[in-house]
Amino acid sequence: MRDQIGEAADRRHTAPIASVTLWALVCGAVVVAAHAATGDVPGRLGSYRTGIITMLSFALAILYSARKHTLWFSVRWLRLATRMPRSIARRFILIDRLETWRTLHITIGVLALLPFWWHVDVGRATLLERALESTVILVVLSGLFGTAIHDLLPRSMRVRPNSEVRLEDVDAAYHRLYVEAEESVLGHSEDLVRAYLKNVRPLLIGSQPRTRLMLATLRGTDPAPHACATARMALATAGADGPLYGGLVGIAERKVRLEHNEFNLRLSRNWLKVHLALVMIMLFEVAFHITGVLYFVGF
Image (cartoon, rainbow, N blue to C red; front, side, top):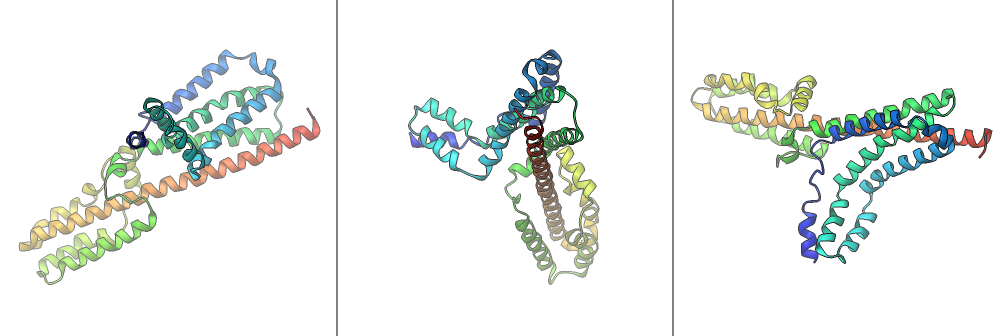
């Protein structure tokens, strides 16, 4: 049974849907349609009930963050799966996939806008409540931006064996590529050294424009061939060491791909910082809102 579950566990990182961005937009369309069809709900439920439903929805969405940072739930869930028949155990493992939790986080986060919208429709909003509305919208928009990043990051970054996942490793890889190129030209002709210093070395010590890297991310393309096209066209200037010069251009292309790798890592990390900061601001405003309601209005 444990071997069977292990086979299923190998598939835990398969995306449950093809495009999380498209799925988030579909959920958003459902929220708009449901709100238009339930105009009488805010009046029937009232501010307290719609507020409680909204808070429960936000709490469910935040569970994804807890799942990412602790294996407590996952370990116990998989222990339970080992006691199940094979078909049921596989479904248990599919449910525990981080991608499944992420999809649920996106789904609940967007659908939570419906009870929040109901809550906003009840009564007049104060300045604090308008600020809270704006923050919730920013949280959702930043989340949509994050799902778009996930969809737009080139597939090569996710499957290429030499892609780095830590910025510290990127810095070390830069150094290795530079040393490899410098050692390759030692003891060779002046034509090769001159061509290397003019065309290849600037690529190794310089940086690609961020706009070029962003466009490569958006298009899902490899920026290296275009960035190194001029260097490759100078192959004839290397004389008899042309094959070695071609290898040096190959090192430069690897360096450009590494820059793209670093750009994508920083894009993902910086987006997450912004998203989490907005979530913290939202939670502070929610706590202040609830405290104020209980103090001035009561149950």
